[in-house]
Each structure stands twice: as structure tokens, then as C-alpha cells.
Image (cartoon, each protein chain N blue to C red):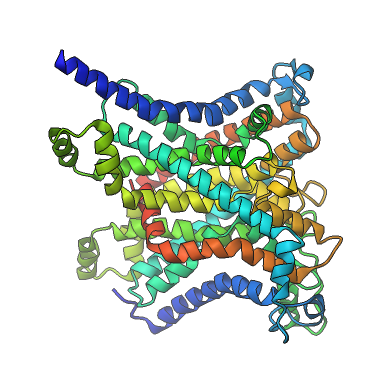
Length: 279
Length: 301
């Protein structure tokens, strides 16, 4: 069905166009503003193009002077570590819960699924003291463990659905061939569940790269900040030292990796969200 | 004998796959949650020697604390504003991008989701820039229509600042819920619409009598999800855009107040009690919502 009324059609197009601009505009201008100096911010309209010569040096400045190089490294390590750990643990649990009958199966399932409802703010204070006792404050490992745990319920939930959708005959055939339980999982089921695993990987990656709430409590040393924390600190400093251009360069450095991941895996992200939700 | 060995192998396999994860989950999720529930009954400054059991005193305190009442009100304001804003726009976009058979639907869909992959910190900083009184976009834009330069400090009006937090959070949330709505609409059998077409039902009545009732389940799930994520996560945007509840605590939400009480004023017991309040408020709200929306669904069909 297409819209017949030309006026209604025009209206729909206008609304869609406005929202497109509303989404794209801030990103585009982040790039352009990252190339300006303070003078250009104060004298010209916000939508004015940056003047030549473009200040690409804002990027190297924020990278070294504001430690965005360090934050970037921290973000990479924490994101990769927590994403891998979360993926492996949720795949193993989801496989068992989806394919094996045993006492306690239902209870475990209920526990993990109810955890989706828990406000994480509740766990924040005890987590701080727990990590403090374990000497994991200001460490990559601390953030990796906490982020991995945070992502477990959703990963398990999504992968259970995925494993249930795979035909049972595959495993039966493997077992008859004399493959062990471990062999069946690692050599047969794990490769087959690749689409589900990729979805979990990307959602975990985006969550962990963007996380701020826990990170800000569990780190207080600038050398261990991740990008969102470093960025928030930099913005707070702008009250005393106005360096808008570098701030926008920092915004872009924080955002670009997720935008690239999104552009590559756009389809998996959309199908993953719907797979998790329409059930 | 042989089957026993087999059974043992199977059980060992199961155990080796679920126990490590469950222990890990117990340490980093279940234990902290239980600790939070327990510590909410203590007067606790962070050093373990200084922790004293005080029963429900923290909760009594909460109900006498004008700031927490304001914070709960603000949380509800954001919940209601986000539910209305996000659900109307997300449903509109989903319908426009599926039922109207636009050729560029895929393009819009990809674009509209972008804010959902951006860190909330980036969103906060960007919108601070939009609201900035001197160099901000909003004042410059409004100045195009006036003779005098518009000079409004958007985040500086105590009674209205909380309103300014709605646009960024709605902007950031729509894409995700739009995808959910699209999935629900795509699942509706085409024959329903064909039949309606033959009966001569118009666009609007098809939306009311076919689309709406059939995506109602998805709308319910989405509303509950908005409630939980808002009560749990508004802290960040408040922290970044209004400096943790300024001016004068008028934009305080429960999460930011928890952070301030615990990590800035070292009232960890009181902070834990606020955390429990967040849990209670979100449970009660989702419970009521599910009752109300079930009613609604019956009336509509």
C-alpha cells in the first residue's frame, strides 16, 4: 500500500527529512567543529564552516595533551576483554539451558532472566567495595569482570533463543558418530551459532565501549579512564579552560569506532534486537 | 554400568559449563544486589567498623527527604515524557517505513538508529553544546527570527530545566524502539490488510483496527523497557548536563542522588536504601503498567 493523498505523502516525507537532519546534523557538525579554533566558535554561527587552514592538530592535541591516546587504549582493552569473556560464558550457559534437561534448569533460567530487570544502580555501591577488597579498582581486569557480568543476562537470553532454533538432529548425529559433549559443542554447535554470537558480540561491544556509570565509580585514576569517562572529565574542565575544538575532536574519537562497527554490522544489530524482542 | 558412565560424563559436562558462569554471576551480580539490600538497613560510612544496624531508619529518612521526593518526581517526569515522545515517534516512523512502502525506507532506518550506538556521554556533551547560551545552536537558530540576539541560558531555569533533558533522551532512544515496532509490524500477516482493503477501510482505520491491536504486545514490552532503563540510567545525562542535579537539586533523579549521597558524601547506607527505592519504584511501576495496559488491550479489541 502506498499513500494516495499527495499532501499526506508530502507531510510524511517532511517529517522523515526533519528527523534525518536531526540525527545527522550533530554528527556532521562535530566533525566540522573539531577543525575550528575558539575565535571561530565565538564569532560565527554554529553552522559556519571551519576556516582554512583546517585545524587537524586539534586531534593530535587532544590525543596527547588530554590523554585520549591512553583512554583509547584502555577502552580497547576493556571492551575486547569484557566482550570476549561475556560471549564465551553466555554461550556455554545458553547452550546447556537450551539443550539439556536437568534439575535446576528452570531456576537458573529464571534467575538470569530476572536479572534483566534489576536496576544496576542497586549493585553499584557493593560492587565498588567488592572491587576495592579484591584490589581491582583502577584496573582493566576489574572493569572487564564487571562489564562481562553486566552483559550476561542479555547474552544468555538471546543465545537460548538461538540454540533452540537449531535442529536437534545435528547433535544426535554428532553423538552417534562418537563425538564427545565437548566436541559437539566446540566443533559443531559453536560454529553453527555464529550469527547469534556475532549479535551478542556487537551489542556487548557497543555497551562496553559506551559504558560510563560503573566506570566512573570503579576508576579514579586518569591513567585508567575509558573514553566516556575521559570525555566527561574533559567537558568538566571546560569551565576553567575553553578549548572547544579539541573537545569536539575528543567527541569524534570516542564515537567513530562505534559508528564504524555499526556501519559494518548494521543488519546483524537490527536482526539481533528483533530476535531478542519479538518472542 | 555403561549407561552410568555415560550419565556421569553428561552431568560432568553440564556442570563444567554452567557452574563457572554461575559462580561468576553470583560474585558480580547476585552478591552485590543482596549486599545492597542488606546495607540499606545500616548506617554506613564506607569503613566497615562504622556500620551500625538501624532498621528502617534510612527509609524513614527517605520519605522525609524533600530532595528524594523531588528526584522521584523527576524520574516519573522523564518516564512519562520519554514514553509519550518515544512511542509516538517510534511508532510513526515504523509505520511510515513499513506500511507506506517508501523506496528509501532502508536508508531512513539505518540513519534513525545511529543515536543508539553513541555513548550517552557524547550525547550529553553534544546537547550541552546545542543549549550553550553563547555559542550554542539553539540560540543562534532562534536569533535568525528575531531582531535582537537571543540569549537564553537553557539549563538555568530551576523550575523548567528538567524539561531540557527530555529532547536528548528522546532523540537517543527512538531508533531502538522503532526497530522493535518495525519487527512487530512486519510480522502481521499481509492478508489482514488485503481483506481490509477489499472492505474499503482507509489508511487510518487500518492503523487503528489492525496495526495497533497487533503490535500492542510490543508496545507493552517497550513501555516497560523505557521505564526500567529511565529509572536506572537517567543518572548519566543528569550528571553531564546539569552537573548532578543543578540548579538547586531541581533536576536531581534517584540515580544521581544515590551517587551523590554515597560517593560524594559517604552515606553509603543511605545510598543503598535509595538503590532499593529505585528497585521498588520500578517494580511497582511496571506492575501497575502491565495491569493498566492489559485493560486497554481488551477495550480496544
